[in-house]
Image 1 (spheres, rainbow, N blue to C red):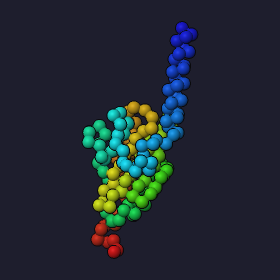
Image 2 (image 1 turned 45 degrees about the vertical axis):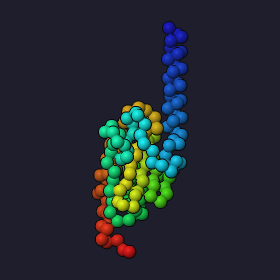
Image 3 (image 1 turned 135 degrees about the vertical axis):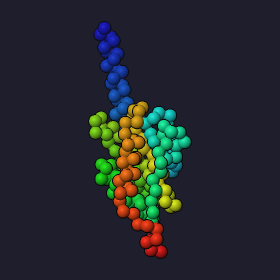
Image 4 (image 1 turned 135 degrees about the horizontal axis):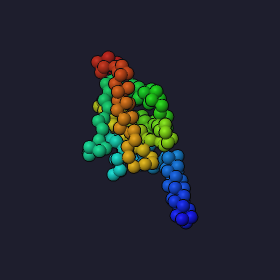
Length: 157
């Protein structure tokens, strides 16, 4: 009996340590590192506008006007939603959201394309199920669409 309890505690410590490590360590599959917008793994803890399957697929965001303005608006919305901008470059934002209950980290990537499309990817660093990525992307979409966007006809040359 004592051996079983010790083994169970060891498994809990190993899984907990792995979870902590994965949560605090920035993944190496981000666009900021690879220069490519990665796909989703087989597990359902990721959503992406580039995914082909229904489990992972989420619609891209859209904007009017110029990409720089869209990027500024995204930054504002992300910060209002409680995200922290980790990386930003022309046309790209990487933000981290921390879950309220378990304090796990989720990575949100946005790639602002010049033709008015924003590709989106949100993935949990640890865990198997989607405990909020899809809902976060849809909340981001709703908040982003609520921000007044300039029409393409009002942009100065």
